[in-house]
Length: 458
Image (cartoon, rainbow, N blue to C red):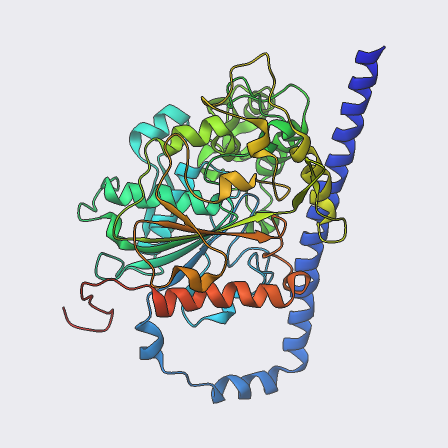
């Protein structure tokens, strides 16, 4: 009888979670469509006025080109410029600086694949996932082609600032390690010094217990439960990619094109194979969720370094507090409806006692503070399997002058999507957050060695 009640509760929770996520996805999608239709209508009605206004604006191009780009890297289920029409993943924060790039990377592809895509987005050329990795993971070696890189002069003399939200922060760390390891064929001169700074906004450095709540097995952090939210997500993504409707794919893409899931290439039997879990990224584990488990993050981090010449800053978010020694959500109104249930579940989560812990010394109480998607302990700085140099601060100014090779981190009262998508929701805090980030990049981060600017002769 007890087992029946538990099963009923789990099914009810799965149903509610699925409905909430679907409704939010529909809300974002419809908001983007409505914004595009409104913009198109405005352009038709006020076309002459817009033309005159554009002609009056004549910014100094050379001044903008002198600035090293600030690259905003989205997280899971995210999108970059060119997707979702005029809708912005970063809530329009890219408009706060003259030289900001917002790449569109695979929203569910692995950290490794996204790091490769980010490199070619900046340098240009055809995305090369690497021969060995592609064979192991069962997908094409080459991906999309960037006819013109968004910053082709990128090198040690022209380094870049990166700002990553959620999994985007880990993508940048993997990219920096690839640069240090000279992992890009045809680019033998890459180095870790191509990255001037990394700022993490709710960065997924050490994994999250939410992956287990959503369906990843805590036994290995690689496979999924037979019935869970992630399985439903997998089925939806497979059908979406197999149908391969150009209009929809142009508007939003999960990033699995190199797996050739389209009906044109996979056929009907390919669809059946994917649905049964015998093919595709879920069969080989080459997608983002295994990278976000604690075990997957430890595996990634074991090969990643914090480099002595780069600057690191992290904003760790949380929406929990302790009442009589019990961790609970810090409020109702301040937490997004899509995340409230997960904030509560993550604060109460207990790792199964019948399986080995994800690492030696794991304690449930260390992982209770969270923002509805990531545990706060995971967002401060890389700490598993070894702890990287770090310094906790209360105010942004506390870390000045900045020292390279140290993760400065600040804990902020916010949920996981507080500083993205909806600028109005965060209000003044949104502006303060991105103003501080961009000001730090422009005024407080620089290398002691002289550098050659893009329009200067070496």
